[in-house]
Amino acid sequence: MKVALGADHGGFRLKEEIKKLLDSMDIAYEDFGCTCEESVDYPDYALPVAEKVAAGEFDRGILVCGTGIGMSIAANKVPGIRCAIAHDTFSARATREHNDSNILALGERVIGPGLALDVVKIWLETEFQGGRHARRVEKVREIEAKHLGVK
Ligand code: RB5
Image 1 (cartoon, rainbow, N blue to C red):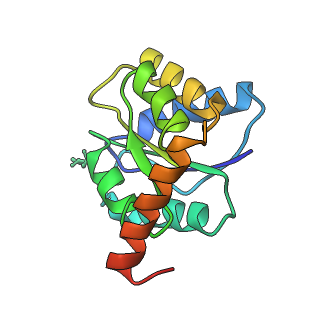
Image 2: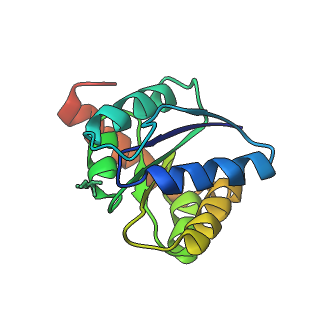
């Protein structure tokens, strides 16, 4: 598995912790910034990660900002992206099993690093269940196609 990472200044420190977790799990990643806690704009970091995941160059993406909200809004504008905010382990597991989410958004100002890293680990290790959930994900894709003009 190859993971694309991105954060704004509000998520920079947690992104650095996530990199240590990925190292310990032997999971390959690329960091698309930001590189310090200087103020930046979250869409500038959501876009490259979402585009790389949508293009299939990376299997998953993880985006961190202060709340996870700005990153998720921006990432979900890219066709093919199913970005989910999860700040608890139940949601992290469910959004993989049910939604086949391909990007996880986290808010560094919302949860502590201990829980955040548990969320990341579970989200990375949980498989999509398919079946009835695949039908629903396909309906989401149809909404995307209708409104964004993509097939
Ligand atoms: C930056 O102050 C903050 O707005 C950003 O990190 C994020 O929370 C936006 O949704």
